[in-house]
Length: 238
Image (cartoon, rainbow, N blue to C red; front, side):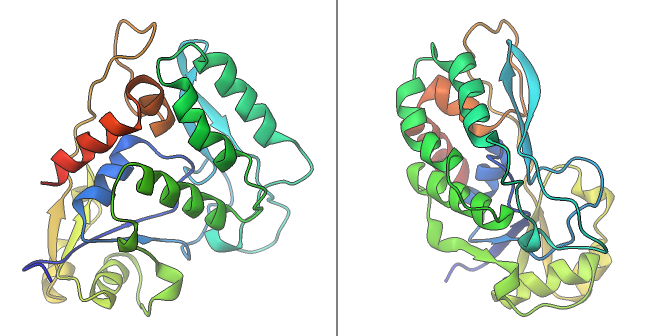
């Protein structure tokens, strides 16, 4: 066991950006926060992400079922099953990325993940993230689910509780997290805060003069290939 066990916690996002996988690479344990409340209105990273569409960064969205009363957790949410959004998204990616250098090898992995018929958002996203994690050569055994761990409290206390549930003593937070995380609470719980401090890796993007950050890891894979991507995460975790 490492001297300091670093735990990262994040909602299961929809084909997330490189910073998400950097957090997986840098942590000793990564918890999918799947039992947090899903926002009743507005967008969510759980069902949308940005890709280059028409050579501009645009949202691509998987439609979700919102005809329910009260609140629901992410693990209770489902995609709309009556529309062929998977096939449409696949066509969008094909149209905009088919000339990229690593199109074929990227789609070999991504196509079945996109077309996965799983209706549950958490299950769908966790499966996709886990598969990509393995393809990058990262340790997928570190991936856990908050719904399968004993935890209590809200906000900062909840994050500490989840960290402690895995015998962690350090919680890794993302950029800008110091704006909403109270170090006093973490200190009282014996948990150290560690900031990820991730800077988006600049890589050549086909037909782009200026680098566009914050896109799905699909964009990075199309331009770099899985092997080069995996190497970059291994170096960042050292």
